[in-house]
Length: 230
Image 1 (cartoon, rainbow, N blue to C red):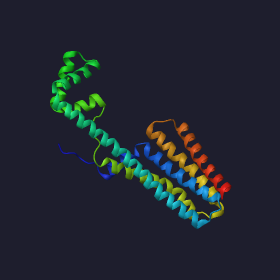
Image 2: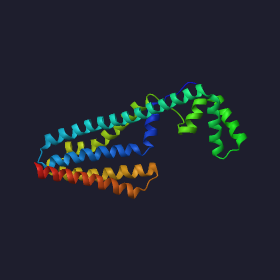
Image 3: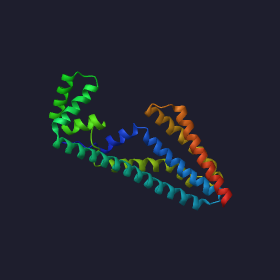
Image 4: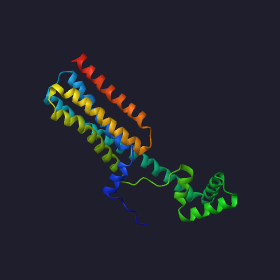
C-alpha cells in the first residue's frame, strides 16, 4: 500500500483547525511580553528591548519546537516498541493472540461466535494492527516525519505569537511602549483564545479568563522584578 504524505497546505489547514496552535501562539505572546516587561521595569532602552524581544522570539520558538519534536519522537519510539513486542508475541503464539483478540471483542458485547469470527477476519487482514488497536488503543504508528512537522509547527506558532510584542517594540516609542505592549497582548490573547475555544469547542469565557490571568500575571511579576532588582 502506498502511503500518501499530506501536502504542506493540507498540514497547515489541519493545524489551523486544532486549538493547540493558538495555545502555542499564546505562549509566544506571554513569554516574550513578560520578558520585555521585566527589561522595561529595569529601565532598558529601545535598542536593548528590541534585541531582547528578538532573542526571546527566536530562542523561545526553537525551544518550544525542540520540546515538541522530542515529545512526539518519544511517543513514536514507544509505539514502535509496543509493535515489536506484539509482533514477537504473534510469531511465538498466534493461536493465543487470536484467543485474546476474540476475548476482547466478546468483552465489547459480541457473542462468542461472532467475536471469534471478527478476530479471525482482523487477524487475516492485519494481525499486528488488530492487536495494537485492541490491547493498546493504537490505530496506527506515528509517521516518521511527524516529530519534525510537530516541532516546526510549534516553533512557527510560538514565533508568530512572539512577533506581536516584537513589532510593538520596534514601532512604538519607549515612552508608550509598555502600555502599547500590554494593550496588544490583551487584544491578541483575547483573539487567539476565542479562536482556540471555537475550534476546540471549549468555553470561550473560561479560556479567555485563563489566558488573560496568565498573561497579565506574567507581565506584572516580570515588571515588578525588573523594578525591584535592577
